Length: 251
Image (cartoon, rainbow, N blue to C red):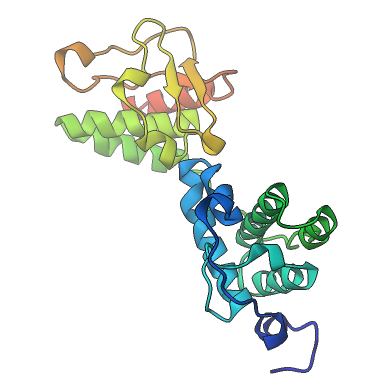
C-alpha cells in the first residue's frame, strides 16, 4: 500500500475504513428504499453501482443491501469518489456517485443518520474532466444506406425496420423508449405517438411534423407501409423527418 494519503487505492483499501456487513430489514434498508423509488430503467444500473461501492467500503464483504449505510461518513464517501475518479470515465463516475448520495438521503429520512452527518458525507464534488462526446451523428449517406437496405427487404420486417429507424432518428427516442412502444401508443386520428417509458419515468407525446398522418394498416394486422411522420412537441425534429423520408425515397 502506498504511503500517499491521496492515492485512490490507498483510500479505498485501508483497513480502518472498512465497514462490517450488517443486514437490515427491507423496510428499514436505505438502499432498498432508494432503489424502490427509481424508475425501472435506472434501478439495475444503480443497484450495480451500489454493489460495487459497498464492496469498496467493506473489503468485498458487503453488498448494497448488507452495507451499514448509516455508518458511512465523509472519509468513506471521499474514498469512494477518489476510486471512481481513478477507475471510471467522468460521466460514469458521476452517475455512480449519485447512488450513494441517494442512499444516504434515505438513511437520513429513515432517522438512521443525523442531518449533519448526512450533509457531510454527501458533500462531494463531482468527478472532473472533459472527455470527447460519445457517439456521433449519422452522415446523410449512412442514413440513406440504412433506409435503402430496409426498402430492399419486401417482407414485413423491412417496413418495420424503416419505421423504427425513422422513429429513432427523427423523434430522438432512446433505445429503451423505442422498444417499449406498443401499437396502442400511436393514434391514427391525429398522428400522435405516446412515449411512455421516458428517462426518469417521464412520458411525452410526439406529433405529426406537418399535421399529416402516416397510412396505417393496423386494422388489417399488416405492418405500416410508410414511415410515420412524427416529431416531439414542440417540433424541433420536423426537418429530420423530412430528411429521413427523402432518404427512404432515395431523394
